[in-house]
Length: 127
Image (cartoon, rainbow, N blue to C red; front, side, top):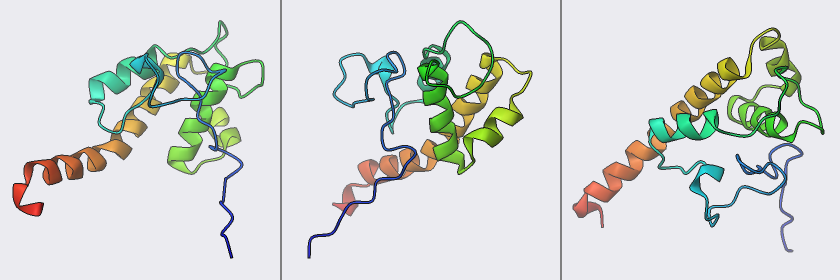
């Protein structure tokens, strides 16, 4: 029996940070479109802060706001929160506050991965 993949409703496609109409891809020529597992914190902050949102300021998921919708989706996936709850947390707050918090969440999630990677790469006896 061939197993069927499980593709969750949310997060099945993470979109590019600079072009939210296309999928995030590690083979993208523009590295500002993606978050790499080994990106340094300063790079993550820069990429999230420069990510495309829209000319508004309301942190609300909407099909006509693909940039902020993408960032909300990333936030929800990394925190296991509902998008509606995240939206409620940021009522009256601006994009920069939201993006700063999202950057910190990403950094917190990736730090142990980078640490373990560095341990393995630097431990020649492991191989």
